[in-house]
Amino acid sequence: MLLKKLSVLVCASFVSCVFAQTNNIQDETDKVIDTFLQCDNQFFEQLSKHQESINQYVDLATTPDNVTYIPVESIQKTDKNKVMFKKPLKYHDLEIVGYQNIYISTTLSGQFLYWGFIFDNKQDEIKSALSHINWLHYSQNTYIANAKIYDRKSKSKTWEDDIYAIDGVIPRFGTINKALYLESSANNQSSIFCSIQGDLEKETILTTRPDLKPIIEKQEAELQERIKANQEKMQKEKQQTQSQANPTDTNSKDGEKI
Image (cartoon, rainbow, N blue to C red; front, side):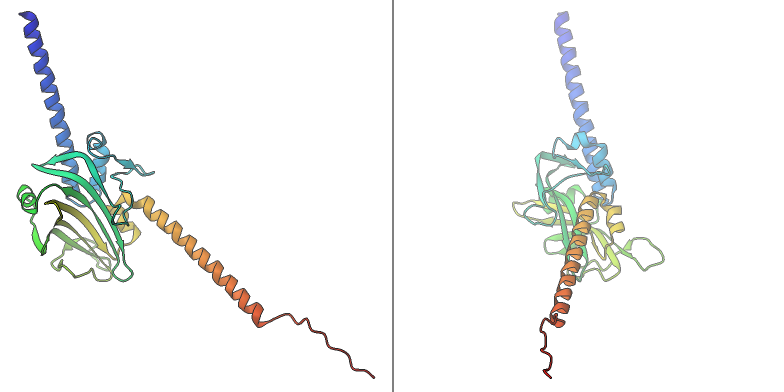
């Protein structure tokens, strides 16, 4: 009888520990996604703080500056900018099944950065579960929330509400936009993206996306290499042109006979 009671107590204790551990992991993953929805660098801080819990769903990486992030193969290639999770991550009765990280650079319209999660849920399910977010229609398949604008020339140096966050309207020169987007996709899935876009400079990008520092530094190094190679090519062409314009006179003239 005593052994039976001890067995019941051990079993109950084990179940209690497992339940407590599960709740603790859920609390930690909730904090990570909560901060992601703020679209700032707190997301990466929480990833670092709760690496053990998040690693159960997706492998994390760390930059030389100890910034923890979710790696994808390439942020610039559409077929390589996402990673699917090992198992679904539960968040407010929703299921997160992947992560996507997108970078688009344009000649005239600036830079566009998108990062976010893929949900195995329809838009209506997400809007219902995240009803504390004020989702507004942006386009036929997209909702927007918390749209902000920053004018680099403004004296206030603060983010203001962006009342002109309309589909098809790009950020004007000297301004930066950020917002939260809810998009529908194939197979009854949806994605929530944070975005920062427009006339971005390195300092602004790294304030929000410290995980991009190695990529930006690599791009800068590659740009300097291209500039150097182009300068050397132009110098070589210039020398060849000068050589052709001033050929060495190798012809000798016979002196006059007296």
